[in-house]
Length: 266
Image 1: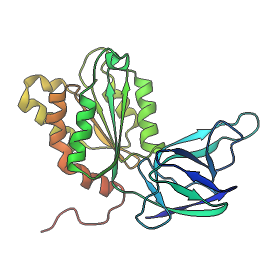
Image 2 (image 1 turned 180 degrees about the horizontal axis):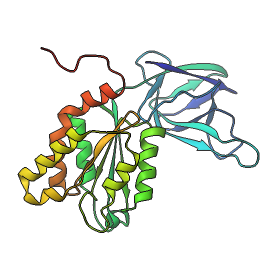
Image 3 (image 1 turned 90 degrees about the horizontal axis):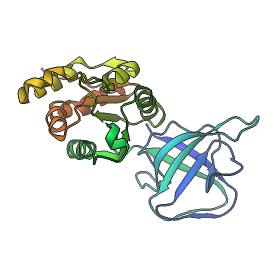
């Protein structure tokens, strides 16, 4: 379903390719520039969504969402961050943009104390991006590296799924039984719908490679409309277990997001 954004431009403005703009549900007094004030409430656009004046001609792509607090008695404002894909001239007055999605959005999250400290190069996270992009049409890939911290992971998963509105979040690392392996607990705390089939398929794929995979506790499921999947930390483990569920990802997301089509035919 397409949505629209009505902007109230105070003066003629030119936005250049690659420039980031802030579409705000109010008029921030400072700190954000350039600000494009929106009329009414901003639609719930997720990262990767496109905006354009003409159908299927993207001019901006959503890079993220945030709440901007002015302080004092003023309430915080909803803000969409968007990057210009071409030069855009905005004449003074009202400008209406249509918004649509151009593919699935993916965020990968690497859990690694050493990686977060810059002491280890991460190859598992980028591998996730490459594998999913080869299977699904993606509009954006975003990467994150966190230490093995339960609260920080819960906060990030919640933000990526419910505020940034990613379609897919895949974690790598922290699925074993070590003292710092907290990924399954953090993921379980935020999931609303478990996917036992995904978990079984990943476990079987791992066990076929090494008997030690039986200690993996990887979780999978949905938070809102976002599919969250835990993977092991090694590139080999990522490659083997992600391959076991990749063919079902698109169908799972479409069904969760309201597809009414039949799951199979006789």
